[in-house]
Length: 135
Ligand SMILES: [Zn+2]
Image 1 (spheres, rainbow, N blue to C red):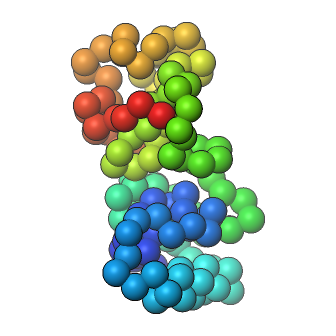
Image 2 (cartoon, protein in one colour; image 1 turned 180 degrees about the vertical axis):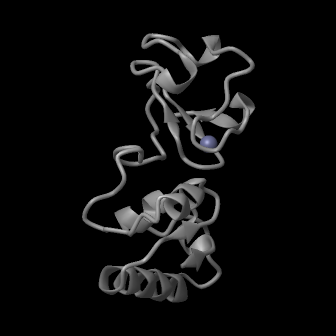
């Protein structure tokens, strides 16, 4: 299933949230409900926009299981309001946690976002660190 802005990121599909501003909120809710109903009844490989999870889902032929989100998804609300040292990718929603680092690019735990090298890219969507916002 190819999907557009009804699920701006895969996280909102699993979390059952409307993720962006819609002209018709009622229609958006109905649509999201239909998408979730469909994927819960039919084995579905989900190709959402704005997240490379779509590519990963296709490559792995990963079937959506609404009760078991992929482990790579950030836990909880992706729009943190507290100062945590975490940074969120504005493109795909990936959360950089300095307490964890990024083993895919040999960044040890304890590395502040500000100290990441300029060559560092979002491990999920490969965007530059300038695409990140403080969480
Ligand atoms: Zn990203």
